[in-house]
Amino acid sequence: MKVLIIKLTSMGDLMHALPALTDAASIYPDIEFDWVVDQTFAEVPLWHPNVKRVIKTAHRQWRKQPITAYRDGRLKQFYRDLNAQQYDVVIDMQSNIKSAVVSWLHNGDVHGLDKYCCREKPAHWAYKYQHHVELKQHSIEKLRQLMAQALQYKKPTTPANYGVDLAQYELPILDADVSGKYLLFVHNASKDNKQWPIGQWRELVTIAVEAGYSVLLPCGSDDEYQRAQRIAKVSEQAFALPRVSLNAMAALTHHAQGAVSNDTGLAHLVAVADKPAITLYGPTDPKLIGTYGGKQEHIVSEYDGEPCYQGNCLHHDDKQQTDSVCMENINAQYVWNRLEHNLAAQ
Image (cartoon, rainbow, N blue to C red; front, side):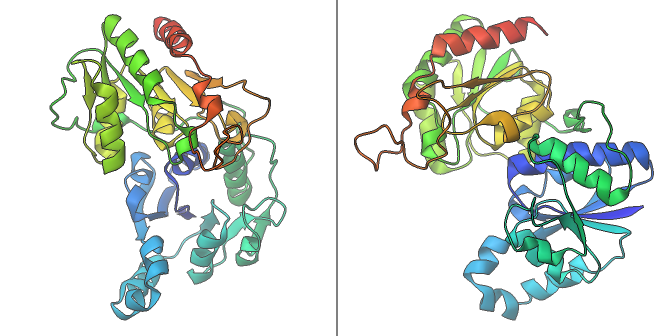
């Protein structure tokens, strides 16, 4: 069986789709997947052994320069790649407007979520086969349910299995010593209000080093690298990592003893790697999209009730302030105590 998956972004969402592929492979051992994905994250789908080919989009660039992308042939080439093969089933596992556009461009019939379940209306208009899933469950379980409905099997009751082997990837060459025990501290996040304060990270680094660990601080941009450097200044055993490929980051995660993360994409990579981890949540709620796995623990700020999901903190007098009071409310020593407990339980 040959199946095309359409799921373009983001990093964590792509990882959430992997268990659905594992389910399908357990039912149809000869199944092969191609995957349409944003070029920024093109390494992620290929972590799964049943994914044979990725079809890359650059929709962010195309949206900014549509005429140029059409004239220089990039859009035409993408259309040819998208329709170069025949598939038994095509599934849009993102079900928003940008993925629906890709579904419309595909010449065959597409499966997706119905109007009650899709992330953005009217994405459901792109799907000949529309499926209804239970919304009050984690994203991973929703995608497992969608895959089961599209491929006509009963969703397994077994725990989600990402089905990847990150041991196949080589460690990058770094100035940091990764031969001994080290922890990953994922300090960055897509929004400022999801970031734990630098002072708390520095305190956590100090505690971890005193406990005999080195600490690696990854980054995805120049600003994040500078932030990592500020945190790492507290110890010679803390290392601000330059930006590396996702495959290299997968290798570093595989060899780590554990991690502490903000609510961001790399936190989900730690879950894929099945490492003991603490993920910190303030303005967001982990129930539906949090890190998922047996060794994952969430610390959710209890500041002033329910998560607000706001871009700027509602509790600052300065409404332009992006730092989050609820994230400031999470104590470094408490985070370490929980991580230490999980590390000891391995």
